[in-house]
Image (cartoon, rainbow, N blue to C red; front, side, top):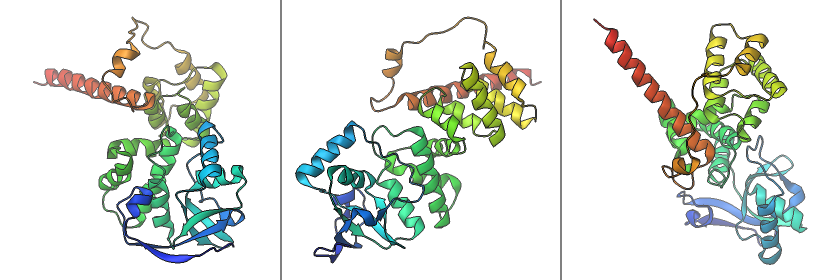
Amino acid sequence: MKNKSAEKIKLTSYDDLFGTKDNSVEGIYTTVALSQLHPFKNHPFKVLDDEKMQETVESVIQHGVIQPGIVRPCADGYEVVAGHRRWRACELAGKPDMPVIIRDLDDDAATVLMVDTNIQRENLLPSEKARAYKMKYEALKHQGSKGDKHTADVVGEKAGDSGRTVQRYIRLASLINGLLDLVDTGKIAMIAGERLSYLKLEEQEMVMEAAENIGVYPSPAQAGQLKVMSEEGMLSEGSIYALLVKKEGGGQTVTISSKKIRDYFPPAYTKEQIEEVIYSLLDQWKQGKEGELNAGDTV
């Protein structure tokens, strides 16, 4: 390992480096050979060689790595906790090593830090947030966080997501990879994916195969029906095909201008987030109407 002027430092303003409010953090600042770095186990965030990566590579070539990564010791080198994109940029830039801060972190603390330093990135896929939130949720519970709702609220703090939104994402993590990919590409809405996540794994496989074969993907309403059929033990390959090819509502269709819808949401909201809000509001409206009907029947 190349150890150039390694010194133990106490970061009194850790927030300046990593955007957190955690201070009084001890670590060793040094440079580590790229060959000694290893990815975080089950790292949920994709590291793509895209246009943004090329921009990072050019920055590394011109200015070096300005913000060090965070690593922790492992059996044969160091596990990268934060800085996977910088690590890849150094590789593409032909750098032999990378500046890092070495910290002694247990699995739970490392997981929370890994998620928190990545979760505010732009354009995260639903699958990335789903897996990341699940990892952080489990880590916090293992650390002794009290109450599911409280823990979900804490998980979403860094990204500004509510506990309910966090729980929806965590449900998505129960989808098989194929269905989760369809959520990522927008072929299946997030709320539909959430409902499909309650299906058994073999049932999810059948749904994915049927959808891919006929090119029809479950709508939120159809996903809800599939969930009910699964709970009643009536879900089969035949019933899945029959439901997907059946035209929903055979009555009039309603088209709403996407521009008009956009006016109601912050510019930063993604298509998936907008859909989630709309379907949630429609669910609430439907439940309210059903409640009114039931109340009218009461003597």
